[in-house]
Image (cartoon, rainbow, N blue to C red; front, side, top):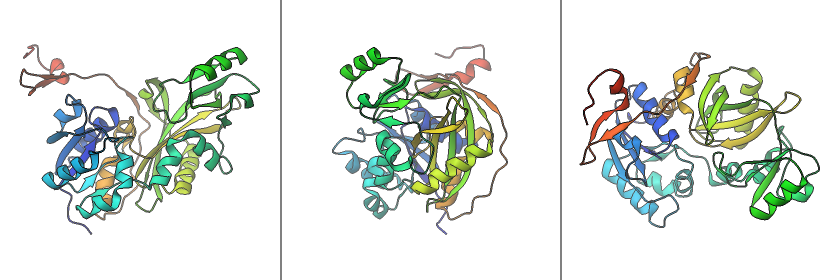
Length: 333
């Protein structure tokens, strides 16, 4: 068993997944230090953490050098997979990172590529699982509507519904590197799955996406649907995803669940699962410390999300957060 974890690094402090991870560790009363990173110097997660560092974007040439210096400076022991960008250098440089005493909770690079490249996802998994027909070639489309979206896209950016041949011709001429996928008219679900470090799934928590904005759930309800749990665990087991992942499924016109997307990391809606009773960031800490994970009781709750403000003074020091507004009549700006 490893010694008790005292410092974790959470990348993506400006995005929901990073902020959700910080919140989840706070809710778990994690006694160690939380260090957050982001390339944006005004990231909300910075002001929810014990320490923060502005870091180059994950694609930058000096990213790993800067990251290693930060790891050494703060004696970081765990890298959380809370950013869809940072997990790639985490995976590529896993051996080097471990030599600096830090455990990057991330899958192998090949698995990350299968999940990122939507045509690769279809080709790799469609023989074993139910996926909507997916192609790079618009000439293979014979019925409408279809969904056009970027092959390597994130969130809902440039996701378009194509209703006929003229729209298909317009989209294919205007956008490059798009995939075309059968339109699924039914409800959309996210399933958060936690696996051990050998890629064996431990728990799956599905929820129906009642409302989304820019690809992020803003309203959702936990639904412990056995078919979603079983199918998502099979997918994760097939890929041997390490640690947390989130899978999107949607119902087709016959009411059957179809796999739409896989994210091999903590998702933007991680807090839904935390509040329902399964705290994945805390489970990651437990696994690194060598503890076993017990199956928590999951509540089928509904979660509504809203913006909350963080106010900084002229020196960029935190003045107050939005929750103070509901407990005080005085604005301290």
